[in-house]
Length: 386
Image (tube, rainbow, N blue to C red; front, side, top):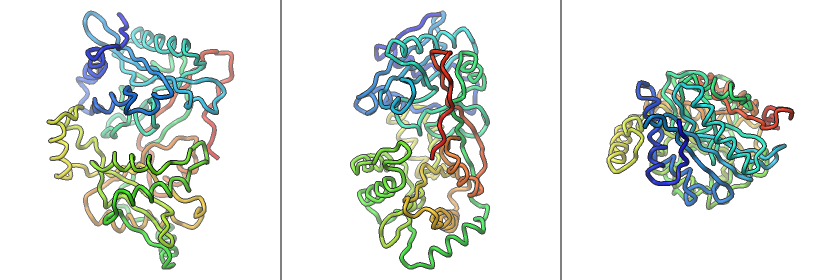
């Protein structure tokens, strides 16, 4: 077996091709878009690379490419941690412990050479909503777009190579046709009896207006708290630009108080129900297939990507009002039968409690692992938010 550092365009294609060997007999696998993965390794499209470094390798055996891994360093990722911590991601490997060990060893050696004292994985050099964590339960439901999917045996690979559970990640699912719980009905009715409050989707709003509303709620909900930095309006506009091709305006919902945006519930269709027809490549043929299936409303699962409430309005029942309104106005469209919530870490019990109060159930779980390079140091789980 031989490790090959990815340095050329041809080697980058090999890196993208490795999963087709691993999952060739897995009918449940939906490949990540090649274009999405390549953006991770492109300094122009991945801002994290401007303050970081990345290398990646493929593992070859007798002319067959049987594994891959990437290693990341980003100074900002380590801020607030007890030791400089890098990451590994995009790990794929045949069911061979020796091959897996070679991949881990190479990535860890590179991280040590770059001053790291610990490694988290599998993670992504970028936002936590993409390619983050190892799937450990439920290998049968459709994999969600941009979330990892992997064989069950990967868990033993990580744990046998010294990786320990840093935090659990839970995906929640809710049947949209289950009536909204009474507690949320009461909160909705009480809040909406005040004419200063209103709820609406984003129909009739320009993308600039939607970006301004999103930025306002985000910054008042999280900006400057719990490690979240304030979001500039320009970044909010970029987020909205990225959503334009996939958005359903009926399922992005804002709550206003005296015309000030104070809460949001942002959903998109489950894109993997469309991308399973694209076969991992959004080239011109893939784009035509995407457009066709989008127009045909192939996706009947709704994915909640973010739910936020202005801190000044906590305890006023805004969450319940949003859920009740969505139950009345989204279910009636009869386009979606299920909603899934993007992963919630076990370091955030408040959000887990909210999801469970909504009647959602844990349907899938992931693990983010950590390995300390000095085994004499004390290992600590991810700190609880708040």
